Length: 255
Image (cartoon, rainbow, N blue to C red):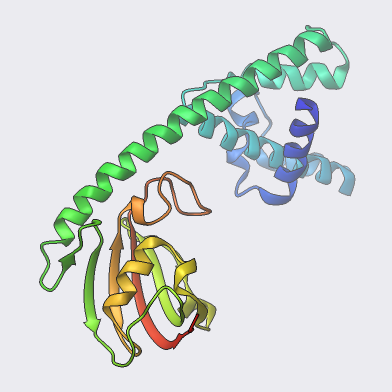
């Protein structure tokens, strides 16, 4: 299984990681090479260039993988990796296939545990930063705080029927993290979204009831009213979410 994963990763790196520059290749850090012009002139044909391009792409991928692993406390030796590649190509392996398989399984487990620890740390940091952001935001003029911890700022009240959980809403919205990164926007997609109020996150269910059709509101939603400890796509665990919402239409569905 581990060999299949590694082979798949190598294939994906060729497609996804086009080399930005020759200097990014790990081979520059480990092997004495000829000058760039000498290498360029040494290509005999298109196949040579293709092989070289694939090698650089693989090198770039390995570099990026090493950096990501280093961030979670797993340090691997590039020279040993290059030696393993060379020995695999020459067929002169220093370890048995059984030993290699066992070592890679151990590495996989080590990476899994290190990643879990890092994610837990990130979630804790996100929660603390979110609390600080909400504390500062709550001091702004016009901001209200509910008993659940939701912060909201009404920009326009709107008019018409009050919303219930059985209300079908049509909204335009923009969602950002506290660091300013935008993770979703109906405005960018060019069309509003229609859905039942009862089907959205708790922060929306509570916050949107403070406005009516035609209203606008900013919601600052703590993790317990958003996605909690779950990591959703580009939203990290324990994220405090900021939504700017424009309520375009309201249809109350009678049960």
